[in-house]
Image (cartoon, rainbow, N blue to C red; front, side):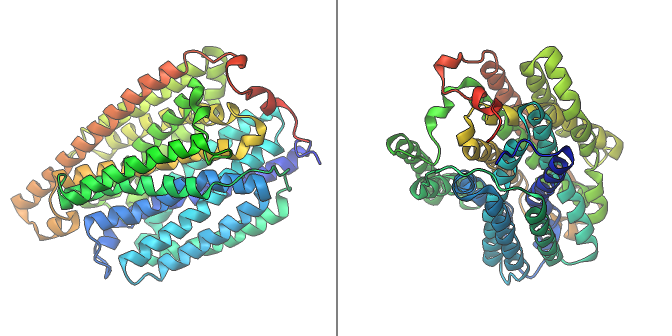
Length: 491
């Protein structure tokens, strides 16, 4: 059955359903950041490092399972994988809402992350199969916009929930949303062709364990000491396991991720660009609510709405980006967009207690335009570099880059904050009065400045590498044919 010959109205319904699923899954990456002040003061009494694990558990599992989840969709059907993912996502939300300690909350976040790992690659693969080649770039632009808006709506929705409900309300709200989306997917989404995609459980375990090891070293470094045996062992074990993961992938017939796909300079550049942009974006999301609530005195709801300027560029720029690519080329648009993100982050390094919200919103707008320009081209570039029968791997690799970048952004910024600012912000600011309060605020914003400087500079360095990767497209004979299969109608 052809899935690309569907009526435009039917295709639009599928696009709406896929974008809604992506938005909900991505919103939970960001919404938890609005709950940090409530969580820090709750009966769970999480330490600063536990808070980082609560935030990152979702994205670690999300990123580690994305590629095998994409392979599951290729093998057994993307529609079934998507509906199953929504069910697992809801189960994790229930576990999180019922958490009696931080360990249970971390586990619930991980379960939801596993559900999100099934959701994201399935949605992208379904769109690539439903839309004909000439409409895929616009569909991908809409999908990418939904990913970005998911983070923004997570901030807004998280702020609304935290204003009127305890932190558990954030997770309870996800359950009916997941149920409604599962019904919508069942009604409007066609079944797509399946392919005998191989599974690689050993590779999946090595990838997740390696990521956890590296993040353990980053997150626990401030509390345990950077020279402590535990932290050094975490880094060493993480790097070792990731190296074993690569060796394993080179030796087995059907690896989780074939490292040889990175022979394409454009694919390497696309993955790096996606990861770097989300590294910066989610570093911002992590500290945004803390800055606005602790330093500026905003309520949770006002903090959520304060991030709305990020929607402007991300909503408008993707459509403009397609036209700019036709006129100036993909490389110029991607490099320009990533450069704007880096500049916006460096501007954020200048904010303090006296910074007006108008200025803050202007910096957010710079970031949003950069994301809107670069993200669609980067996403489509990664998927289109792989043949159609590897659609699941391509979409999984695409989204894994986002989530690994997000996890590292949260971990790195949170670690810098913990290293430069001793104590827990809410407790320190609650106790301080007068001149002491001003000193604590200044200490916190100084730590923020260091964090944004490091993150912004890192992103600009990554932009240089992306520019090199996009300089030349490899000749078709030099790499596995990718563009041709993507242009063929799906039978």
